[in-house]
Length: 342
Image (cartoon, one colour):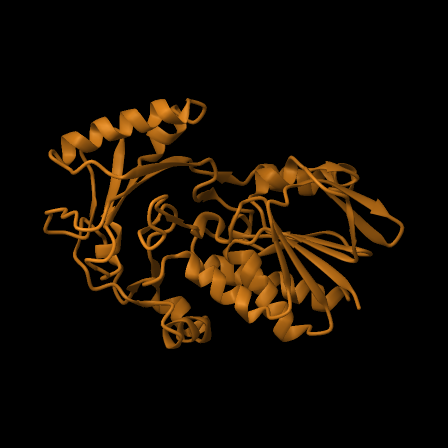
């Protein structure tokens, strides 16, 4: 039984694992992610004091577009049927809605989409805090090294991490990537930003008429969400949460700053926008070095095959475009590459 390693347990990685289980059930599937949990840029953070108080610090909602709805309808219908997605009905000020599109939220947090696909990849072994550093070619297999623990052997490796992290990998992969491929990979670019999650105790009331708001007149803050309200979940049993996203220019300008200093600046601007905001029980500051793709791989191929025997494939939104449909297209493309070359 061929053993395949999927590096990255975000949306593309989890969906790729689910499709592999469906299309190539004979494979033994393993997922590694450097984080402590699933989600990647679709992770859901929890309060230190009450895990029921959650906040989405990455993706905020999923947009069903008319053109892609027919192409990827089965994926959307599956998530809607299982209650993972539901239509966004809460008021969002400043949102620009494309004609014919529909925005959906995740009642259990955005990471519930990734967890759904991990469940669909039944039998796959998922390991967290597995940070891949080196990939070596050992005869007909790949030897994959991580920061801690022993190297492991795999017949197939699928990389779904951001493109700059692929280029940072060491070992034989450095020489396996052709110069033309390297140039294409280096052409992919991402925006950067910070996000804050403010978590409150039960009984706290945040008195605003909106669930989320796009900010246009602030040099730091671009988006604010009363996150549980955005998901139409309000309860007296646990407190609300507030999500703050900075603008991309602010994120780039402060990318290498100490996170505590950045957090202080963001909170200062938040106080100006929402004076009298209650003091949170705890705060999480998240730096998104690779937030959204600003320039994807030329011609958006969905994946790039770096080596055939043994197979080494990479993909993700950097090979398509930075939204749900882009991740679907990439996952499908990578699975097709495996089917073709196995």
